[in-house]
Image (cartoon, rainbow, N blue to C red; front, side):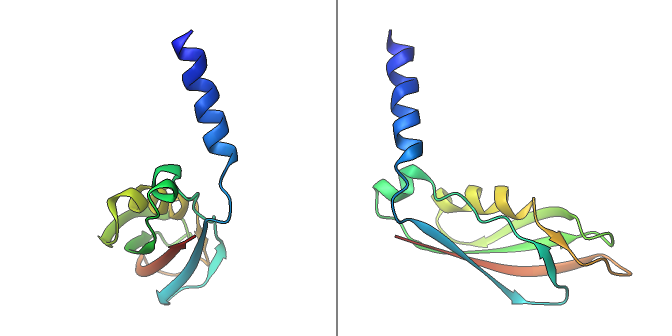
Length: 108
């Protein structure tokens, strides 16, 4: 019975995102982004009214896939959502690997 309540709570929380959004801005652009995935605003951060900017460095392979994401700054509650989204991004192919500085702004 307890598992059922927990599952119900998770479903309700997942559906109640309200007006929480994450805006994406690439700060240092050596390469254009072909596909951006907007991060999901973590429910716990939304409930705690945590907003702010997450900065990360993304290492992008020559074929445009994100190889790794390294946080530079931001709330620990928002960093994981940022990393999950950015690993799904696709960049324009290039002749060499690049390192891109990306900012994601989370606000309610």
